[in-house]
Image (tube, rainbow, N blue to C red; front, side):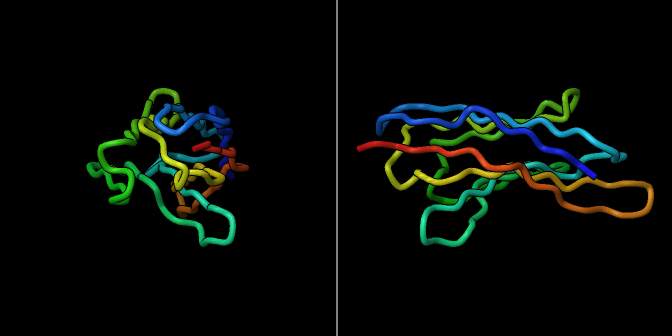
Amino acid sequence: QVQLVESGGGLVQAGGSLRLSCAASGSFFSINAMGWYRQAPGKQRELVAVMGDGYTNSIDSVKGRFTISRDNAKNAVHLEMNSLKSEDTAVYYCYAKVSTTWTSYVGWGQGTQVTVSS
C-alpha cells in the first residue's frame, strides 16, 4: 500500500499563492507518476497536473500559473499555485501511481481544501 500525506491548503485572496506538498510512503518499489487532482463542489474530480517518467502534463486552465515538481529522494510532489482565481477553489487530492515487484496501483491522499476568495 501507499500512504499519501498532503499539506499546504488554505484560504487565500484572488491573485495570491499557495504551495501544496504531498509525501508518499509505504511498500512499493518505485513511483511511476505523482500528481494532483481537484474537485470543486458539484463538479467531477479533474486532473490538474501530473509528472511521470519523462513527462509533465497539466490542464490548460492552470498553465502559466501552476507549477508541479517532484523530489524523488523524498518521494514527494509539490504544486506551486500562483495567480489564484476563485475558480481554483476545490479540494485538491494528491495521487501516486506506484509499482511493486508484481503489480502497480494508484493511491490517493485525503484531500486538502483550497479556497480562493474574490
